[in-house]
Image (cartoon, rainbow, N blue to C red; front, top):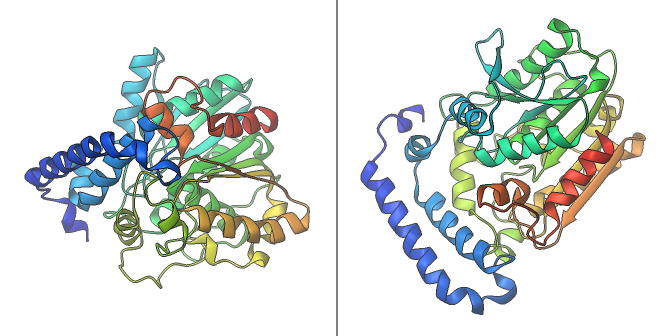
Length: 359
């Protein structure tokens, strides 16, 4: 599968962009008649139509060609916002990037989304900067993990544990001052980290924590690779990508097109409630946030039910928030689309309010 990223068709990319532009142009006219079948507002409905079309038309090679690496995006964001980049190189050679003062008492380790195929975006970086600014004495450490299809599961989990190990064992930080979080594939990875801490993955060195982590933040976590649940139909025109795109990305991540190769670490919705019981001994607070308009909603809600029974049943403090009319990772996408504040769904305030209260 890695060979597919070597020679992207630039003509194919141009064709995908043209197709997306035409789809958006048509949506300009028909959007007012979509009513509840479309996205939350007119602008988002048109933009999400364009995104669905473009993402659905690309190949893995084209995904990679149009992508801007996380490190490059971080350096450009630092230049644009006027701070000096500060990165660390982990023993494996992977980079992690500081947003805020690395000497801050509290740290949020963040795993970005992008289907394990795409890098962090300016929307991710702006949200993380806003979180850093809203919580006193806090910095964010963004992991630039290796991407699929060149690097398949469990590479990303190994690197996610590596950055935690660095903070705890090399820097000697108190786990109770460390939170972890992620969106979409990064939410999947956050759950995988919790799984590994509770049930060490056979191919990854265990990590023992002397105290609980402070919190875990899951924004639209990619919990299930099943693209045939009801939300894929009911929310088909409300979100920004389709099952076709998700299947391309999950196949790249797992290194297989088979729907039966996921395990409790890579596809957390498969884990029974009992799997999450020991996580209550590893983290104090957990937020699971999802949007009512996203196609991943069924997997998120099923994971939340099992997590509540297991983690919550053992005394873990879980907050589950589904914001009506919000799309996938809307607090991030709104920043990408240029929104300066909440667009009316309340998704940004739901996430950031929890962060301010808990972190």
